[in-house]
Length: 487
Image: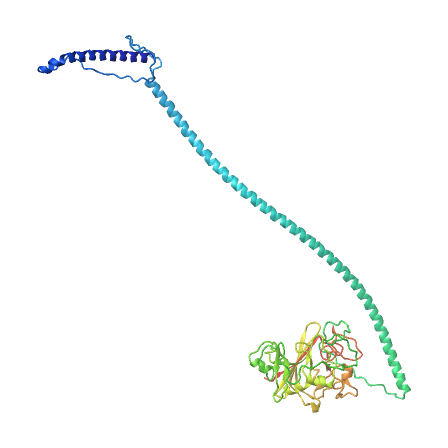
């Protein structure tokens, strides 16, 4: 800086000297100008020096005196050299590289920050998912606990029901023992009554005892395996028991009257048809109730048509299956028919007669025992004679696997408790508790009492029996009588 001051002083002094010299020159020329104007301009003097001006712009306002030195600039120890500039540039380059490195670090840190933000977002999502799973697990635990409580309640109920069943079983055994005792008393009383009846008859002078029908002595070809003994007697539709040897004074109304209303539950509104075979020919292949009307008759018949057996077309005349209908009835009931067409029923003797006289028909009797086995007996022809002939039975030859227990009834008239037309001295319908084509009394009784379980106890053979299949003391589970025109 000291050298720079001395240089500035020298330049200033030089400029002052030149300015004074130039001023003196200009003044000399001014004094000579009048004469020069009047005379010819002389040639220019090239030896005269030209004026030069040097302007010094100070960086700061000069407040002190400006000194001029003749010694020249002094050496400056702090003068900037090229090496200093090169060093400065190298430092600047180094700092630039460091700035670039820092920028890269900043970029990396920014990426790390973004990744951290993503990780935090994923963490929040994961926390919400974990919370949701936890709630689901909690609900599942609660549900399983509720199921466990319900299971415990059910177990308690099962235990209660089991104990109740055990109590009822013990009670049933007690009642069974009491029933056996009462049955013994009844048997003793029956024997005593029989002895008293004999004494009364002898006292009255009648030595002959009342005649009872002979028991069936046929050894059946097939004996069902189930031989459980029972005495459960059938009940009528109102579930009121009836006593043996009695009949229904007010029989149920027959569904087979003249011009009945259209039957409810029929499968079609077509018809009426002459028989179920014509129903089959009309294209109806589903078993069910149909409306029939025999040729030459003004009576409409509601009948069950069986189309699932042997190519169909069978008209069901009688069906027994559960003991829901009482078959111990009078002549008028058997003539008109009774029962429920879709359950136990008898279609009526007059209807059977009208159907049979339309042409040549055959009969099939289907029997089912208490083991579920079904057998059949088929007769090549079937029809009845008129009421004046007592609806006499006319059968053809037998074929089947149930054994022939019906041919011995061929040619016999129909007997009920109020019309005795059998060959026995007494009334077979009274002893067998049903109406049938009795002989004396016969090898079959398909309208008898429906006993549950098969083998039954009775003084008379009044069950639903077929002598060639099970014998006289085996009551069948279900029976069906069906007819169809001969092919």
